[in-house]
Amino acid sequence: MIEKINKLIEEVEQFKAENIEQLEKFRIKILGSKGSLKELFQDFKTVGAETKKEVGQAINTLKVKAEEKVAFYKNHFENNLSSSSYNHIDLTLPSGNTPVGSMHPISLIRNEIADIFGRIGYVIAEGPEIEDDWHNFTALNFPPNHPARDMQDTFFIEKEIALRTHTSSVQVRIMETTPPPIRIIMPGRVYRNEAISARAHCFFHQVEGLYIAEKVSFADLKQTLLYFAKEMFGENTNIRLRPSYFPFTEPSAEMDVSCPFCKGSGCNICKGSGWVEILGCGMVDPNVLENCNINSDQYSGFAFGMGIERITMLKYQINDLRLFSENDIRFLEQFKSVLL
Ligand code: DAH
Image 1 (cartoon, protein in one colour):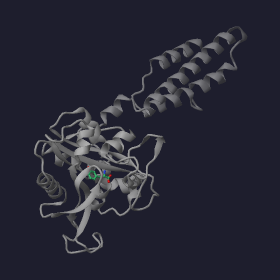
Image 2 (tube, rainbow, N blue to C red; image 1 turned 135 degrees about the horizontal axis):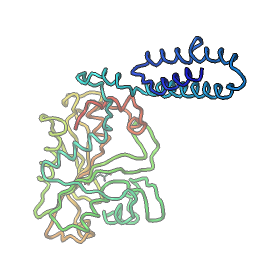
Image 3 (spheres, rainbow, N blue to C red; image 1 turned 180 degrees about the horizontal axis):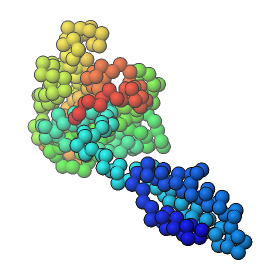
């Protein structure tokens, strides 16, 4: 009997399964309810006392080895490691769709604005979101008690430190450190202490523009902005400049574009006027140049500032500012196909 068991142990040790069917056959043959082990246990009852111990141990070894073998191959096949399953992979099949993300609409439009100005030589500059009074207000010609400071409801961190209320602060930082000519755009996030609604938010994004050189005129400003408007909203877009006031520019203006939806004939987006306002601009006030140690007799320049949300809302017909910061996947997914 011991010979028979040893033969079976050898068989188990040498067994190799190529697929799950072979393994199952092997399992039934050795461990099954009518298998070799069952038979051996039956015969074991008749074994004489003198060999009982030896035979018992041998049967046990056979059982352990057979179970280990089955467990090993089971695991092997379940983890798809069998060589036969490799053979069934068809390498010529096209792959499944890879899920792609989407760019946030604010990023899309920011990149587009940067691109448009990049084509006429503007480079990007950035500055801190936590700003001091000098760069956000004082250097920009807001006197200490000037009513214009009230135009900005500000989040203060300390007495003279606040979250910047506009990207105009970056103008100052660049002019302080860079000799003209300067031709930059400055995208970034800004903060104002406003109640959140469809039309106002406590944070949003702006792009500031600045051109400082010798003999820069208002005509240069107008032509630059006309070029921008046509690139952004289409070749047939018109612009108009209305006189306005900002402490850091003189003269100052606000720019409207002909309504991109009704092309100027009047609709509910432009409230029937045919025009929509998109930015503030003007000639940099000589006081601002002097505050930044730029000689205002030699140099002049223009600046402009626009809200990215506003332009994005016009481009994509979005009617609620809150959508930009809620991260609703149903909103964001709609920008999947926009490649910029
Ligand atoms: N800083 C202004 C704002 O936040 C926008 C602005 C207006 C920027 C006129 C400028 C400018 O550079 O010349 O409303």
